[in-house]
Image (cartoon, rainbow, N blue to C red; front, side, top):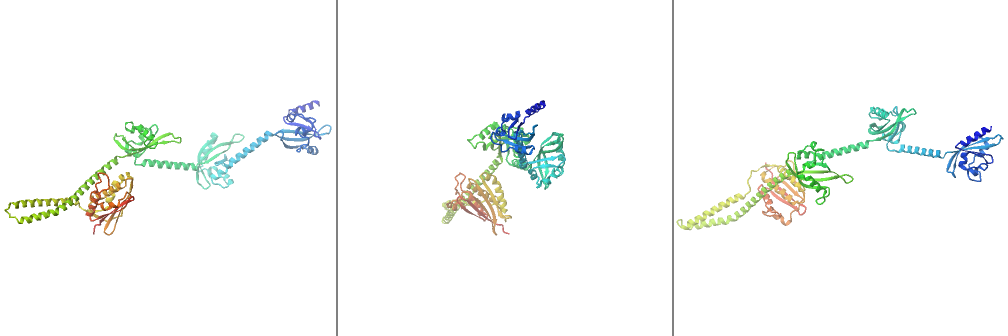
Length: 606
């Protein structure tokens, strides 16, 4: 018996929970080692004095219920003095003497409480994340049903009720291509997980959306696959952005390749990256032969590539990183030199580092040829103006001399009648009269020469003449920032005129408009008619004509230009030619706003 008592005490001492025994007067009869470790030795003392450091019975004490009702009680108690929480198991113990004591087992559940609280918090966090995350989260069975999905998944596929969605067959109702579900299952069961599996889903409305699935398998206790869980990301916006980027890239490529001027780009090592169609035509190299294969330096003569980069990087000639209209001669593949102007710039990344250079080359050969043709035309026109002015001057001189000359001739004839034929003086008079007649004939020829050329006049469409002249001058005027617009009357009646003379007039008018707009502007040409005449209006937005100059603008040798060529013959020639065709020229002008010349010419009569 003694050994049994000894064994029971050994067992109680070995138990990690605190155990103590009190009598009905709250005196501690026994404390095991764990209880002493928690509260200190207190056998024979009042329990509330040891456990709660108080001189009064604890307010939470359950001893009375245990003694009176004679059944066990389990409850939790937080000891604020120790900062610990205990699970209390109290029960009545009947001793051999018949005395009833209360046995209490104190289990420290502080750590367990914290773990449960943390686990509850984690569960709440998970549920909150599950409910609020922006992408779809799901759990599905292997057989093809959804076990659970979050609101984002329902919203993505436009389902309002979760219970209806959970009844859907994943393979047939959700996958746009059911065979992709089989492909997904084979992949995830083989690897245990899938990442960014791209597939198309069907919305409730039947609309197809692209999604990415990242998931892993769910296993049972026997490590058998019972389902899958993961996230689904809607790729619609990304796909739309990719489409927009692709459209933008396509547009930029079309823009680059449709440019009439060569466009080329190279990385900072000089390797060509961009080469458009115009570059192929102008320089003779095909894009497949230069992109990623050829250095841009090979196109520059005499090692000028480094000089160009120096100009681009410098700030003394232009804005840093930009080069405007740099005159340059490129060499074609066949060795022919191509003259032009290069505009170039350096491309930078977000960190400001140089990543590439891009250039636009303007081939000016056609421009130089056109300028040469226009210069020749202007020289011919200038020569014609000089000849016409000289003719008018000759005409004026001839008229002035003619009248007194005929007076001299008449006087000589009169004197001749008074002198006998055999008189020697009569021979002198005959000689004088002969020379006077010769002089009159010479003046007559001069008058004939001074008249405008009597070219054949044929039916002319004025719109055609104007269109030809404007087309010839369009590029030159555009380079002077002058925009040409026109408003031609359809099927305008024809006039009878010399085509060359009309061209001379229009060319002169266009040239005057160009000089009136040194900083650029607009030239508008309009045709119209009434019952008798057609009208050509040429309006510029130039400097205008001062009021004091208006009466003289059609006079020979009058000019407001400071250049040597400005000898004042243009408008006077135009005026003479139009008058010769039975027409007239009028002018409307305002200083600082522009000038309009209105030419009227008679319509061919039936």
